[in-house]
Length: 552
Ligand code: NA7
Image (cartoon, rainbow, N blue to C red):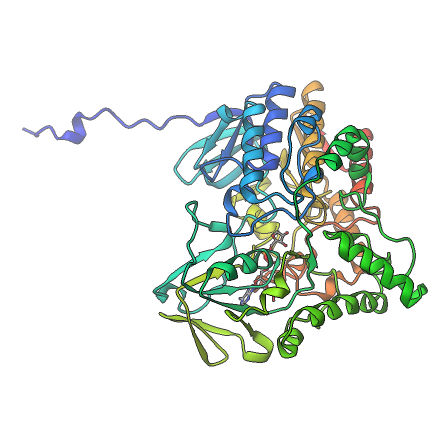
């Protein structure tokens, strides 16, 4: 007689059918929160968000390093579609710190009442299109599966962490943290020997803060950066009042602007100016602080190397005037790329920090590059730098990285990651041929990171909402970019950036920070900026979604 085993007695395991949604949004940052609100409340769809973190906020959930704050002025670094919120919310500083921005997004999540449709701790690992049912099946790392008619990747442009494969990293006996995976409880640098690897926008914010706490700080620089003072401070209540009274105009200004800020280029060549005239303009922008020096300078700065040299010379003089040790100053001066072709970091006492006795610069060009991480610290140029804590501020696999991680397969099982091996190809940075009903918010080849992000995010979310409303109201099932329209957009993106100095820099805009990543310009630098891009997207929609195939 056969004995009954526990397995025999147990009820037969049943595999639950995937949950069926109308729309799935991936990511609960600025994009995902608004996207969910629109899909659910405006379109009446059954929509959910899958979020990898355990709270809302996206970038502002993850990036908790010391000094983390936005580089856009607070009055425009927010949602603008909710005019009442614009009036109610009060920012405390010109550039709010990460905790304040996170509080704002948490407030928005409550205000929009979206939390009940967000599922946290859900990392999407596979997103597969079924041509027969015209549905996407999305699977998470914990085995959850849903199907949805529409998938909206709201995963952010800078959310795939880049930790370079430094040999020996795993042998380090101290603590090592990437800035975008910062412990929620913070890190105490008191009495510690700290090393920061990287000198991008993140490190430029973190270094002065860490230097104040640490016993000793060593900064490992691969490429120096042109920095401009942020000039952060408390928001003058009178200024805020005036802005609130004028928000309609402010919103119109940023939506039609070049970069999503209230900034425009000086409409002349710097080469046509006298030294006195331009010095006065440079001083004005320098003392104004923020992105004016980068995005509201003379109009030929991005196009003409001679013009660019005149402008960058001013910044080089500022570094020499600030850093007391002339040798250190020379090492902090960029020489290998044109000003503005890498992301402009905004600083508060960055160069001044190198005057402190407890701060040392290790420059890859002069002292030798990082060779390895050892049990005790970093070895660079044959020399050992003993450390207790290493802060890895080495950035992100920008723009394409977060999308490639979603395991996206479109028509014919074609993988997006494989298709993009030579660089991203999209139509308007919103959709990809062969991937019906898959939308990307601030995707590659859209203005995205070359703009004040919330402005571009709102424009994309609203365009996607209108597009899905169009399909629903006409009984249409799918929308898909045509290969021809996509090829035209890809060529257009490349043609415009080809007129500028941008391709000459080893920037993350060019994918140059990740070994093996194709050297392709990732965002879209339109001739008329975000205003022109907004017009183009609106025209496409008005023409019955020109360049897309719509079908039942
Ligand atoms: P960034 O701007 O990509 O900066 C990363 C920094 O790390 C930069 O100085 C890099 O030097 C350096 N880096 C990267 N890889 C290495 C290796 N392998 N060895 C040594 N140094 C390295 O990232 P951030 O986080 O500062 O800023 C990203 C964006 O977030 C920022 O632009 C804002 O939009 C918000 P490199 O210049 O590549 O030579």
